[in-house]
Length: 187
View 1 (cartoon, rainbow, N blue to C red):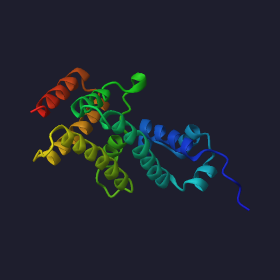
View 2 (cartoon, helix red, strand yellow; view 1 turned 90 degrees about the vertical axis):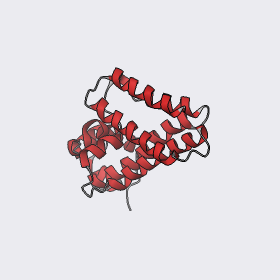
View 3 (cartoon, rainbow, N blue to C red; view 1 turned 60 degrees about the vertical axis):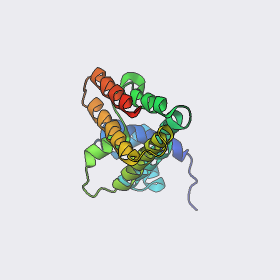
View 4 (cartoon, rainbow, N blue to C red; view 1 turned 180 degrees about the vertical axis):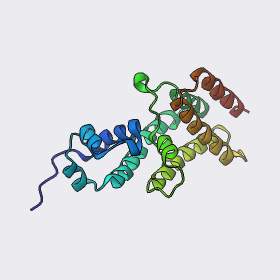
């Protein structure tokens, strides 16, 4: 008879999210996942599978919790322009003063398009962001002919800002870029 699972899977995934977000896929060993989650390597393998499978589940958890929560909090109601602006400005003030960034962004930079198993999770996360931007733009300007293009531009800006922050780019310059973009959306 198999031993029952004696830990909360979502808590373990949340801890693994932070490990991968801070150290990247290549920099996160099974030992690092053991430390982060408090689980033994045997428990990790038995519950999730190998590191690749753990990472795929971590990406899914990140999209379903962190990304979805941020988008809903800022774009779910109220003035769409104010919500977009606020969402983008929060990128400049990561909790704890760190600059570890977004797991999606970090993964895209680390893996690139090289046939990674992570691509499906990345595409799902980026699509969630783009769809939320599109919905906000359509609420802001119903019938806008270039709404889909504007949403893709916002996705590129959003992800680009996260890359620049991670590389230490001056945040004041990024504040100016965000203000410029959203002043242009008013039109």
